[in-house]
Image (cartoon, helix red, strand yellow):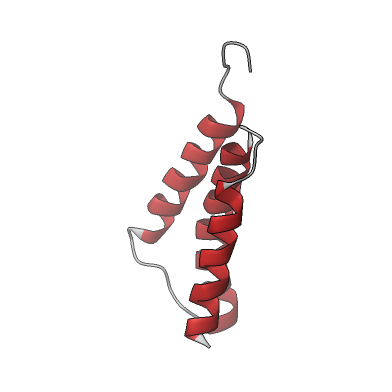
Length: 77
């Protein structure tokens, strides 16, 4: 099962690398930030995992970085 996940994720990244839209990187940043925070939340809800004192701040840092990448003002685009 792990091998399939690695192959699927690798294929996803490979296909994404050839997309012509420059904004794709921003969409991937949004996906990454939500994935990190969602993974911690899922671990809490589905597996009963208790995040340690670094998990939640780390997820918040990911979400803050995603916010900067997605919505920071840019010159010309």
